[in-house]
Amino acid sequence: MRGTSRFRHADPMTYDLGHHGDTEVGAGLIDLAVNVRRAPMPRWLAEPIAASLTGLAAYPDQSEALTAVAARHRRTPGEVLLTAGAAQAFVIIAQALRGVRRPVVVHPQFTEPEAALRAAGHEVERVLLTEADGFRLDAGLVPAESDLVIVGNPTNPTSVLHPAAEIAKLARPGRVLVVDEAFADTTFRPGVTGEPESLASRRDLPGLVVLRSLTKTWALAGLRIGYALAAPELIGRLASPLPLWPVSTPALVAATVIAGDHAVAMERAIAEQLATERAYLVDALRGVPGITVAGEPAAAFVVIRLGGADKIRVELRERGWAVRRGDTFPGLGPDWLRIAVRDTATTDAFIEALNDVVRAADEPGERELL
Ligand SMILES: Cc1ncc(COP(=O)(O)O)c(C=O)c1O
Image (tube, rainbow, N blue to C red; front, side, top):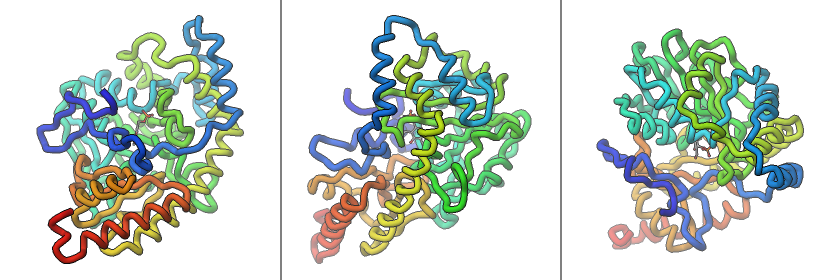
């Protein structure tokens, strides 16, 4: 089966939590549905990964990668758990923390955390952030009794970057606070060194687990590599459901190289360029009749509201463009689409197609056809 929409995720509350952008990208379509950056792998990353193939007879050794990742975030190797992508972390959290009684997922957000919790038998409570509030987190909305809270920062699909101080309010003894920072490396703020609002290096917040992905900026979705950062005791608990050798040798090499100073500097430059391209996309989208861009986008994608977006998405496919449907995200619906930030030439071509489709939809008698 191609893609990731899986039967196990059939959701009683009408959202297909197992649907992801990769299932929307068909042959020949220009992909604005998946948020993985499109760029050739730099030589300094490709060469060590390729060289690692000669060592595949040996079982993977994590020590170098653990040391490198820990150093990057000013932590110790015992505070790092390497995973086969951030996606695997959601599954092990759901399995390792079977004892939690009141798990809360803050939506709209990536649906896999809730799907993994449900698959492990948890009853999940949703806290819904609203468009009226710019999809910004209000820590006061999360029930005080919750012993597991999962929030994304920046959040997929809204692209909103919550203040670190607001998220920190959610940390407390007796609660595990999971912050999915899969897209933190795509954020940039002028005048700020490093990633704005990241909690990756914070060691003072009880129960904090920060999840990171290396698959987005570095276009390594097929390699499967990410990690969790937390206090050693919590890392030990989360590791318990993992099989032996969960991360392959090439993925470990990628983690080591990407944690290095050169890669981190490159990441910052890529994020700065992305900020320019995102501003260009947002401006262009705001010029299309009927479109509202939600919140203040801060990541590698933006989310828009547009009447009849579900049908407009289908029309866009006819014209060769894949965008991500919004109706599978709790808190969004059929009038929402998520669009990946690409280079300005791609944005120009996309906006032209979008304008055409929107105009056609507005022609008398055409609305019903769309
Ligand atoms: C917000 C978010 N978190 C985590 C993931 C999982 O990333 P990966 O497993 O590729 O590291 C994704 C993938 O799309 C995502 O959008």
